[in-house]
Amino acid sequence: MPKFRPAFALAALVAVFAAPAAAQEQVLNLYSARHYATDEALYAGFTRATGIKVNRIEAGEAQLLERLKAEGAQSPADVLLIVDASRLYNAQQLGLFQPVKSAVLDSRLPPSMRGTNDEWFGFSSRARIIVYNKAMVNPTDVATYASLADPKNKGKICVRSGSHPYNLSLVAAMVAHMGEAKAEEWARGVVANFARAPKGGDTDQIKGAAAGECGIAVVNSYYYARILRSTKPEDREIVAKTSFVWPDQAGHGTHVNVAGAGVLKHAPHRENAVKFLEYLASDDAQRYFADGNNEWPTVKSVKVSNPALDAMGPFKSDDLSIATVAKNIPAAQKIVDRADWR
Image (cartoon, rainbow, N blue to C red; front, side, top):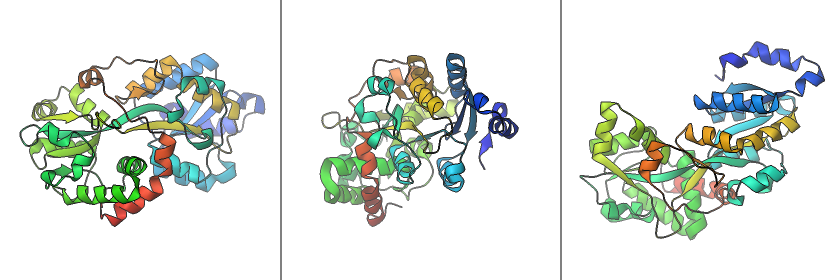
């Protein structure tokens, strides 16, 4: 079930919606799939800067999309905040967003970090990396995404379901770079190299590689960064047994994805919603937003001080537009289905 943050209880929402129009002008109703402690400071900063109170409902992406479909034009929500291009694409295909034209967003965010028709925007980025067991795998054997399909890695790969948004977006990027036919051939090669049937989340894949259940794990960067920052003995053991590569540094670069947001089609406080997106592109908000999940700001001039990310070092990222990735999601889903990447 969706959960209400204690500071933004249902009673408060009811009171706001019953208030006079003038009072409503100082409100933003946010549906968020994020759940990080640093986000509290983020929203408090927006209120300090604008005087606009943030009412927030927090739930999983699928729950929020179902809620918005059910509410239709009567929805009280102004902004939807979710992660991954595939989920943003789903929301856009449902007709949930409206275009936003903003000089602030135009000047702060690169074109690669915005959806078709400026209906959504990426505010933090994460990379899809390859983690490997140092005793089992030579890093030169996993230097590219293509190498995941190489027969020399047979029986070595741990990865989530192909239908999970993180993998769908990676496959969609492969479609953009090599076409559908070759992307499907690649996906079939990856499946042929599985050490086990896909199960669990990205952390489970890392643990599998550390335990020797597989030699290779395909994961989002922030999962590995969390383990790098941890002082738990079991996590220190994982770090000792594993390392990682930024794939395709000699080619297109490492695939990146986003956490993003858009103004909802029926937003009752549209002006406040646009202000909120503009705030998310500010220097302070970018630091809170990205560092809260060990990610990187999408505003290139903003730097974060994060010991895990610093330890992981710089890398060349794929400059493929997130909108292009999103456009290829339907093709990616067909590919993973045909490849039996369950």
